[in-house]
Length: 189
Length: 85
Image 1: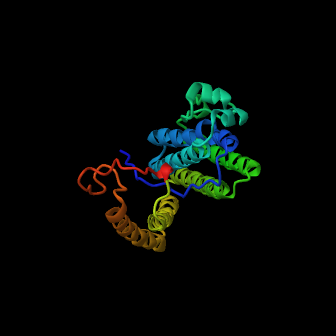
Image 2 (image 1 turned 90 degrees about the vertical axis):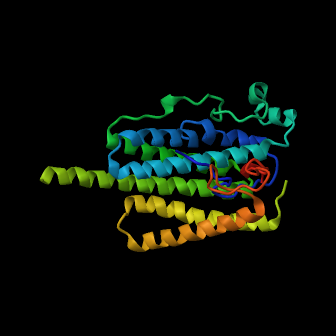
């Protein structure tokens, strides 16, 4: 089972109300390479991956939910004081028409989240390579958002998340090597 | 709503220790033989529990489903939630 802790993994502060930035950040909430995709991908793949890497998929998948909560906290703080006019000006008019200020799992362009973003092939190497690619794509997305953001407080949290993608990618690469070693061992005996 | 400075500082301390624990967990998942990393992990696990108990006595429960004790009346449901802080 899972349990909740009443804390964010890393502090989330924003300098000011900024719905335009929130609109970009939604990419990492319900986008193809976002945190929801990541969490659901790893926690689903773990049931058919070799035992040696189940722990890693469980732990990274769980951490992704903490990241999802951080993104939600950012969007909440960036939009909570915005007027409908400000939301409209930031390009969030269509979002407001459907959801008011509620969060929804869609990407920056408004496309709803879909399970077709993620895969479970049942082939451990194929799955782990997908996971490495997903982390690299998420890292790139964080960089593009940081490039467009002029909020130093928000960027501090975004840089934390960007660095986590790098660590996850590294751990998945090590998992591939562990599985290759296992495979080669079996051939010799 | 801004929580007292003391609360923010203690929370940041917890976040630091717990971050090290997350990082060590992922590292140990792929380096299970690293004795020093395991020692550090166990030491920080103790520190995390102590800091959380200290925080909870002043600012309310952090851990769900019996991980923390409740005051009377039930205070798990009390605001602020993490994104409101």
